[in-house]
Image (tube, rainbow, N blue to C red):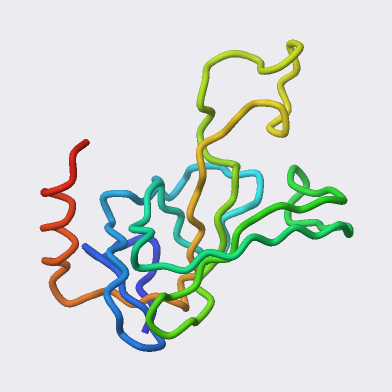
Amino acid sequence: MAHPPSTPAAAYGCAACGADLNLSASHLYPAGTYFEAGNKGTLSFSWADESRLRFAAEDRIRPFFETLDYWGIHRKRTRISCDACGKLLGHVYDDGPPVMEGTGQLGMGPSQVIPRRPRYRIKVKAVTPTATGSSSAAVAAASPR
């Protein structure tokens, strides 16, 4: 059973195989954070343990419409899958917080111009809360900030 975004678990694992993904609630964006690509049915993380995940680039040239603010012809995003079983978990989007302050190149402000941090957008149905989250807490404590 997926954990509702309003009550985040300490850590999340793969719903398909039970593998610990080391996705910590401490890296969740606040529930009310606005993202151009939307946030419906997903949990958005600012960091993910890339050793527990598989990544595959998607580069499609065809129209896409996710929200009124996030649409276009050329979509670049990265698929995130569980490293243990290969189940699709979500995607990496480039609509996180800006890397820099200001208006971007040539004084323009659209998100396509301002460099942004990645956002790991994980489907709520693809993950399940882990019992203790102790392994992810140990990894977080050991990793330098």
